[in-house]
Image 1 (tube, rainbow, N blue to C red):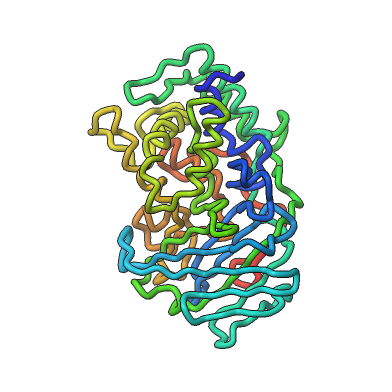
Image 2 (cartoon, rainbow, N blue to C red; image 1 turned 90 degrees about the vertical axis):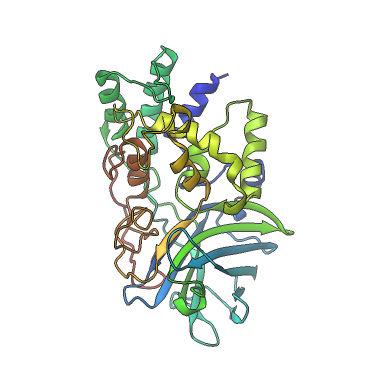
Amino acid sequence: MMPARLALAAALLLPSAFTAASDHLDSPKVIADPRVDIGDIYAWTSADGRRLNLVMTIVGHALDKNAEYAFHIDSGPRFPDTTARTDIVCRFPSKTQADCLIGRDETIHGDPGRLAGLASASGRSRLFAGLRDDPFFNNVKGSRAAFDLAAAALRQGVPRDAAGCPAYTPKQTAAILDQWRHTDGGPARNFLAGWTPMAIVLEVDLGLVDRGGPVLAVWADTRVDDVRIDRMGRPLTGNGLLAHLGSDEEADAYKLRYNAATPGTAAEFVPVIARSLALYDGYDGRCGNQLMIDADAPPGQRYLPLARLLADDRLWVDSAVATCTQLFGVELGLHDCGGRTLHYDAVNVYRSLLAGGTNDAVTDGVRADDQPHSDTVFPFL
């Protein structure tokens, strides 16, 4: 059996050995039915500043007729304050029938398979659901090779500082980062090229979701018989940071608890995320330069600010801004809609902010998807 600390490192470096998206296959219930397995979610402001665009990819090639697929949108006047909630809940009784409720009054009914989208009666929203090329890109093999090197270094006893950050040597750091940006020793390749999961795509007028204010916090979940099966907000948080220092059975139970929770009830996951962040902080060869690190706090509390932010696993969108260029844009206080468009280099930016506090501290060598997507033309993928 892999030692516990190496299992933790594996979770940090690679969301899953068999990953096909930034969040999936993360609990027994999800593995049992990929039709309710959320691969990724995306949320961003339209270029004209009038609508919120939403995408949820589902790992299975079909949707479960008994499941609910939902986006939850909390709105408020400023980050991180939200005062209102709008739920968008969709069911798909058959391949040619969708039933969605947006808030209390807006509904969409009919066949969601037309590329032009199925419009609501009011014309303020539209829906598409069908197989589309997935926009997430990731050099899984390179990440795996980097994990193997990091695991070997940990096994050999890499020292850690008082906060738990590993002090890799310059040679070890260079070797890990080199493996990370190559595939089988050659140019980096996108492991997900050609992957076409189910996609649920929505375009909604902002007036339907911004009752509390222009700043929106978005997360998604799937439910069957009123039991939450999977949930997701930011890329990689669920699988990349929620490692567990115990047996496989304990890890499975932990993941089930995470999926059963909500952003508002996720405080129990802060300590383990903080321990994971300590390991991430060392991957660029420097400890103490991670996003939001509290250098003045006692070592055991250094990573808590970012851990709390990530445990509240929501994508933040400033809908008052139509320019969308930066993952964590709202959290960083930038004049940017933030959220996540189809073109963000999400895996590299996310890991880089955790490793070195910048957008390019680490890279897996894959910078764009193999297929063209559009952030402006529905259904985008």
